[in-house]
Structures are given as structure tokens and as C-alpha cells.
Length: 120
Image (cartoon, rainbow, N blue to C red):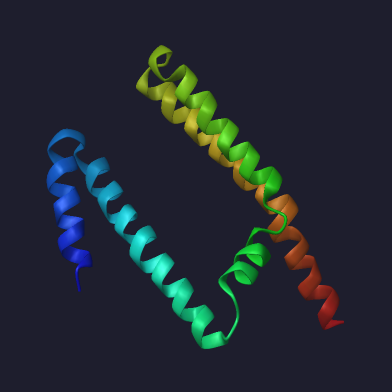
């Protein structure tokens, strides 16, 4: 019930300065803090499993993609002031695409192959 008010509060602070990006950030913060966290704990409670077990299963195989994502963020932050807006978008796109490519190679593709092998 408090989610819309928290979203509006964060939006009132961020939108005047950052515009649509501030609104998107305010929605994303509330979604991550409330929805994802609360739903995850409730799902674990109803499924009678521990949160640490669920988290460890979700994070299996994500070491390299996470390292690439963190290094990409560090590269963009290091070059932030030296690049124009267009090159920041291009760098963000390229680094984000490399994250998804590695994630797909090491996480999604093995799951996809496993589903076909199990159906035979």
C-alpha cells in the first residue's frame, strides 16, 4: 500500500533534475526493494525452502556474467566525463550486449539444451 507513495516521493526529488530517467529510477527502486524482495521471501515461505538455497541456485553460473557487468559499469564510470552523450549510450549498449551474450552462453543456452535433452 505504501509503494505508490514512496514512488511519488522519490519521483518528486528526482524528476525535476533528471526528467524521465528520474521517474524510471524511482519506479525501478521501489520495484526492486519491495516487489522483488517481498515476493521472493513470500515464495520461499510458501514453498518451504530457505532463501539462501534459492539465492544460491539462482546465482549458479552467473560469476562471469556478473564480473563482466561490474567491469562494464566501472569502465563507463571511469570514462564518464571524457565521452559525449552519444558515446556513453554506445558504450552502455556494447557493454550491456556483452553481458547478455556471456549470460546467454553460460546460463540460458545450457538450460535450453537441457530441456531438449530431457524431452528425448
